[in-house]
Image (cartoon, rainbow over all chains, first blue to last red; front, side):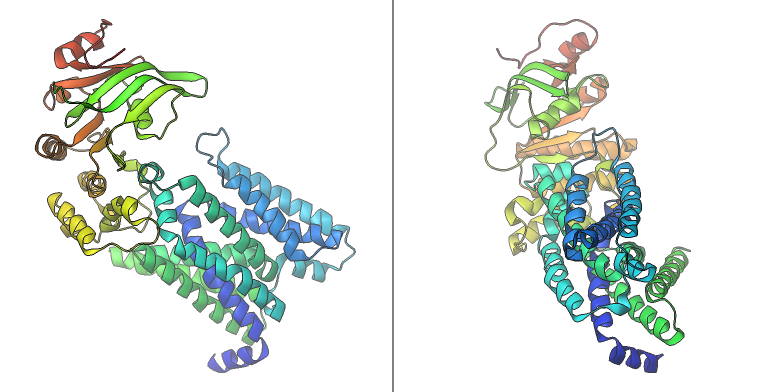
Length: 270
Length: 238
């Protein structure tokens, strides 16, 4: 395993750096995605990013521009307060997901690309990460993480108890909007490199493990990042050694960790 | 009833949800340093009026003057306002009350930490400070939210049905804290409350909210008002 890991580091350094950055940053954002009970937003935004990439391909624009513009447009709508509306946020995300999934395939069917290229462009493959991907991730995702951690207190208060936070002088709408914009930025950029499934996995699985095992928000955030890093490296090593699809191997490794965490939590309760 | 200068003044206040007006032309002077139960049947507009006083709902017409300085009111919502899923300890919930002083970046100073500690001791929360909100009993949850409001140093406290999910003993304990805050510390405590007879044990004056109208009244006047008559109680002004 260690030997395989050493070969992996030598052969795919960009995949490792990109994978770790995407894993840790998505995992930290994922904690709030779960706490806010908007898990579906992860996959809906990832599909919006894929649709944006497809549109950009057809229009001859940079893929990241397409991913960002469509994801941020969706986020601007999803960040609105839905509590008093007739249609819940989940239903709206469902419509966006269906629209984005189908339109992206319709768009690439007109692009003249081969199936393998289309799959790689729309759904990403971490192992194919390039130096420019590392640069994009570092330039966009690291500042997004820094902003989340810097404004952790008002964001947490706004999510925890909206009315009490308002009375205390927090501006929940402002902080929620900022969170969703940062989330859109993270998902759009990460989806271009890692693909929709892996980004969704990073948003949901590590946060679930951390919330099962830790009791303080700071610990949960740190643990989510650490868990994501561990199963990313494990998944990459297994995928490299056994010649398995990278993204799916990482996702499976994450789910195995989640199952172990659930067993530990259950054992702790009995 | 106390005759001190009002701490909150409602001037011809109307509040609406969309086109439906829930509070109609309410004029009310709330005196400083009393415990004032807001009583009335379900759907009368008690919570709506309190939320408007807190600034959580916009008024359609009229004005609400809050005359308690720059500090925000201490708000104690119903327990379900906080999702038990959140990995936030009781201490962190109470420290939330320091936000007006700390803002988004300052760390709590020694005096502020001591204040948090002292309020937690007062409510018997010290032994539970590391528990998450979801792990607390109903009574402890209520006390944690009350402690959060008290830590903010507010003069006015607004509570939404604070005893609705408590057993009798815990209800008595929470109410005794509220009475002490008003009588011993001069705080103004406004609380939405279902039962007039229970309110009678806490205060001489209540705010009757009925059919979107509100006025201050003695317990006897409140019985008449809620019994169907429509005279205007004390505390209302033109």
